[in-house]
Length: 261
Image: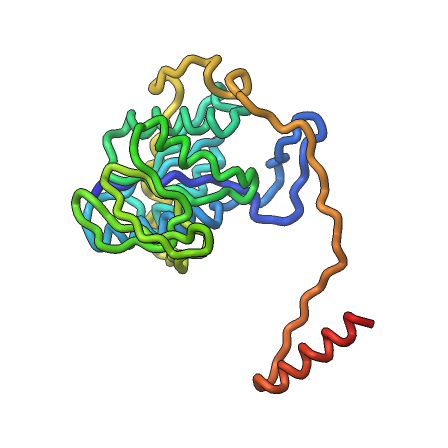
């Protein structure tokens, strides 16, 4: 099975700053890492590879620094890493990102399955995965919690829909977005991290993809952020309760009584 996984580099610190003019994240001097849902997506892909054999290619779109998440993916168990980078891609929206990633996927070959995280922690739109599937004209299922009954031409996926667990059979080729926290992400060993650093990260630019510049990046964006607001603090706090079930129940009851007063 040939699998492609799309991942994103995002800020991992809560101390992020926004540009007051462009309303985009200021990434300079900000600690970056792989989007958490993408860790789940890559782990799911690696489990499929162990079961079915094949290969995993990982793609990310960004600047040169984004290679770091590709090295992490290689250390986890991916086979090849592709950095999709070009100044023409900068400032694009979800649709522009999907256009570029589709061209990159088509450039490197045909895939049986494309796997994405269900949502990115910075933009949180959840749009890129389904947009990729739509532009590739393949079936897709979002927020998959479990994969089963994997065959060469199909697999079964499970997701929550309207409060119920739904079981679907998905014919390949297809795309899935993986639910946040659906598995325990693989932690790469130090040895695998060192081995990954020796691998070549392939770069794909618009010279290879040949996308019209006015269809991507800031000039091709169909949507834009017009305002960003800080979330007001609610004053809510959490408290860890310990003890036996009866003791915890008494503590909860006392907290409810205190809240009423």
